Amino acid sequence: MFSRKRKLKKEFDDKLVNLLKETKDDWNNAKIIEDLVDDYDLDVIAQRKIAESIHFYLFKEARIRKILIK
Image 1: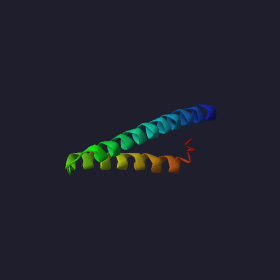
Image 2: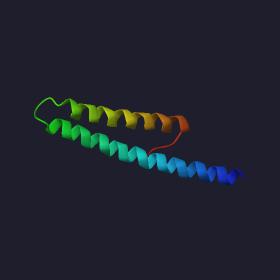
Image 3: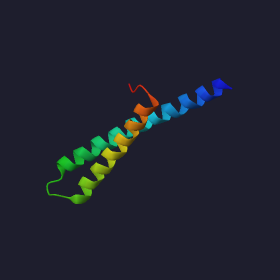
Image 4: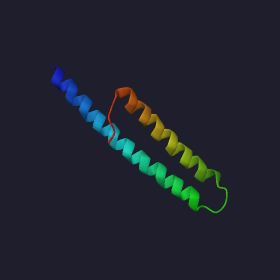
């Protein structure tokens, strides 16, 4: 009974870590695009802020679950 719960927790924790890595890459790509744009583009800035907020939300969730991120 308890082993199934641990197995599910580990599975979803692994998914969360993978999602954190993906959102970190998306955020870095958005920062690079923002730096490459010559003019002041609100859409690019909004995309960067969206990627940043998603990443930090997932990071907060990982901290609540006490997941070690490598």
